[in-house]
Image (cartoon, rainbow, N blue to C red; front, side):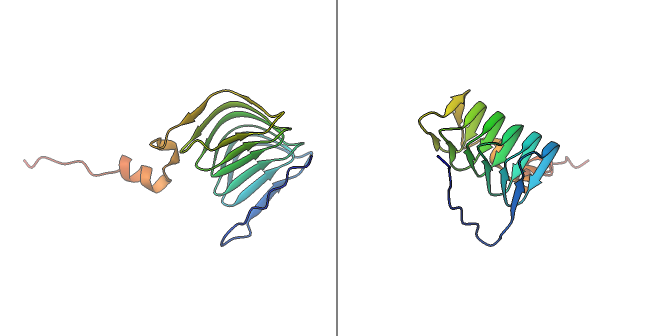
Length: 142
């Protein structure tokens, strides 16, 4: 079975594909959607969706909106939307979501923790975090 999902990307046609046979080690910051058919090790941040194809593999911490895992994934993932583990997919690690939107197809593997935490700092944008960290402190007048 080939897993295909039509993903409409509003306002952009930004899709990055890491082809089969390609190996990337380090940090991947993708403003749009990302499809992995090769191997990525490190950290991945996507603005939209991530798909790990049937032949793809990722050993990384991921922050994304939605995810489809049809290949192999090892690491910690923070997803603000839906996460699907396909029948060929293997998810080994921890998943943190705003809502309980995890689907595991028959034959799919999920080994780890599924945590629902809408108040988590991981879902806040850099600007929101900056406001919290850089908020002015009250100074006493001398």
